[in-house]
Image 1 (cartoon, rainbow, N blue to C red):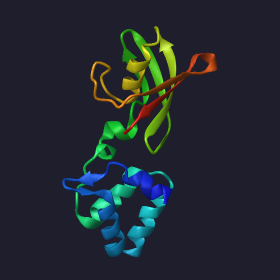
Image 2: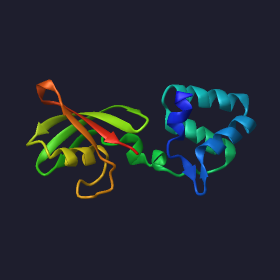
Image 3: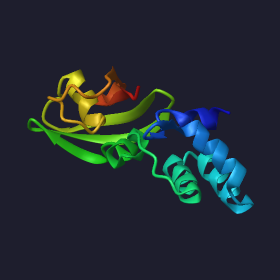
Amino acid sequence: MDTITRLLQEVSYEGNVGIMELVKFFDKASPQEIQAFKKAADTHQDKKAWQIVQKSLGVKLHGKQFNESFQKGPHGQVKYNGAEIKFDYRGQKVGSKKYWASLVKGEWPKDNDLIALADGTDPKSPRHFGGKVTKLEGGRKVVEVWTD
């Protein structure tokens, strides 16, 4: 059930939420589609799982899970105010995503700016939900970005 809860977070198409699509999918999908969906969902390939549902039902779901920048976040190095920060995606759970950040060049930005960069947004934009930065030994930081 944890997999289904994770997948349903903020998934919808205009006027509906993801639970109805999953009910319809499991009612109408072929055994092969259901097996492919379960395999993708159980291995945290959320985008692939939802693509299977969309294709089977002929709907286009909307929500931040279907936004490429949300799916991937920053990958590799990001430049900001003379600094270069390398982000390594460490995983996602309900409510947040985690990255390890390493300073390649320059000085660390403020924590709020680092959270925004990890969220894939402009640090001057107030659009991200927030997060938390934890310093690690060796100069790295863990950046947790809240997703809701």
